[in-house]
Image (cartoon, rainbow, N blue to C red):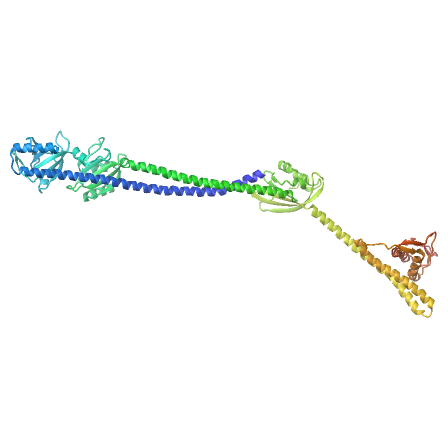
Length: 626
């Protein structure tokens, strides 16, 4: 039973600790949420830092592109000054070839409005430009265009329409120098991302002016068209991006191309209406950030796990401590209950109503009923042996129908199985529910001592009632006995008053009055002696007494009664050797007076004599006392 109670209480404590575990889980969930928010903040911060870094790189490239354009147009203006001096063809060729060697441009061109050209060496051809040259030169402003000659790589051509003239018979309207795109973009791009980045100079409509792409990428003609076909951007997002290009707005966004996530930044170059676009894989830009991100996630995860572990350990430690204290308290209560049950006259039992077995039996059952707790737990039917053989309790089920919350009480008689002593118990049965199972709690209170005390009290009451009845009878009898000497006193007093002149007769009457008074006094003392007898304080007053005097006094007292019933009393002492004896005279007078009073009382009004104490008298006999 102790193990069962312990397990039940542990389950209850486990349920209580479940609330603590829930609180712990909620705390962990809160930490996870906070960590998620923190990671989201870190992610946004990383994106902002990455795009800012990429924007700085792009701006640096933009500055470099502007510097290249400005430097090349400046060269053209210097050469325009040389050509305006009208040098001969040989000098012009030598001068321009020397400049090409020094500056490293791809080629120098004398251009006409229709796009035809002649090089300093006299080579002619058509410069295939992306737009009409006459429209570009009509404003007499410097122009930068891209071109692709047959059998050559794409070039960026810088054109200055400031000087017009004739070279080797070729009439030209502008001069120009060309740089290969890869050389220009190499100068523009400082390879900050190890060749993983792609750079594009485009028009607002997406047409690519020049590009610098990674080795495994293909050249593209229109950047916006590529985004429409291969990116995850919606039409609205692409339109928004196109508007930014048209307005020269600087911006950034994330875009997915062929499954790869890119950071895209764009900025107006200020050169004509070009837009410089940088496209770098996010993982490349975030290489360092990703390491920081991973380390941050590891640290956050470690912190969360550490805090969770600490909270869990604290909860577990607290739970163990609380459970240990509760187990200690349970143990103390069990020991205290066992010790108390050993010293009380109440037997406690916990019975399983479904399994018909005893889950707990207090150890004092052996002392009070002679059964061992083990025998009752082994076989609950052993309790039926407590009833006497002829008692209906051996077969009656007092617990039948006892539901949870009900209580029954009854008194019964049990037989102590070791001593055979009959003992009386007051039984209280209560229905209860433990872990969904119906249990019956029995408390058997030994009332044997109370019953014996009640029986002794009943006997004492009966004895007192008998004593009261005896007293009443005694007083009734005494009232009759008192009247005898009183009648004698009154009668002799009346006679004495009537014969005052006869001294001898008055003296005789007074003597008889005195004897009757002494007897009356003895009767009164007898009444007082009743209280002494009841309290155990009676004492005998042994003195020297003359039997003849005693008989004479008795005769004097009762003589009036004899006369009244017309009886005669004859007294003599037969075979009495010694008339003087030691005795309690009062007690002797009481005995003799009771005998004579009974004789007078039960003798008819006739003249006859009987021996004192005889049951009846024949006619003609006299009453005789011996």
